[in-house]
Length: 220
Image 1 (cartoon, rainbow, N blue to C red):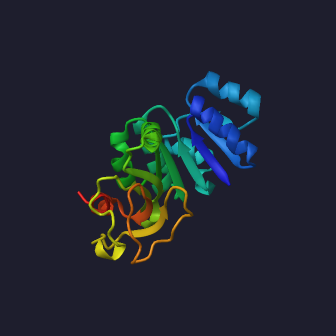
Image 2 (image 1 turned 120 degrees about the vertical axis):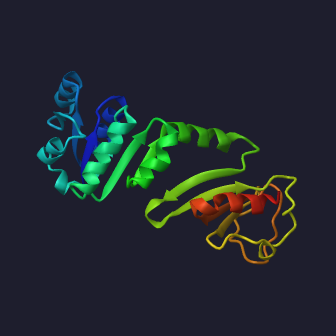
Image 3 (image 1 turned 45 degrees about the horizontal axis):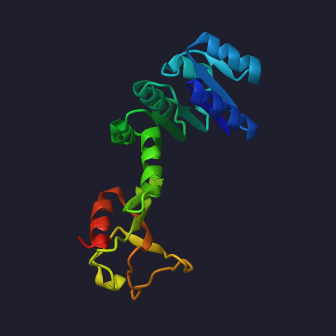
């Protein structure tokens, strides 16, 4: 794949190195001359000095043939603009943007960025995963289908405990796909499957139905 990386700071550096090691064709765009020179001297001619938000720069590096553009500068606005120009001007199939402020995530997705990566949210998800009382964890977002895979833990005091799945009024867009229980093999749930305390339920749902699904399974 031909991948363009906008921003070659610390994150960009390791990303470029990893992508090159995987055999991809990679070109980085970096405003700072010293950083661009360091990458070029270490990894070869894979970095040019320029502004990844500018149409002329993206045209120069052949963005029209890129399979993916990844914007990982330290500025959310620059990352958004780079992805938008790549998507709408050069028709790049896949764009990924780093987000420093998690509040920008919905805006980025609304404006057409395919994938957003928020370090803050990633850390929070790991913290929630480690807490014994965590109730919902996002496992995967399927952006192009408008779906997400989540894990919901049934608390000991949920009123759904002892009920069969067929008794629950699940949102129509939601499917329970797996139940994980301690000291048991994972269960593919059926209509007659009984909910137990501490069940970890993996479900496919939509962002709009997430809160309703969580409320129904928790039974509060």
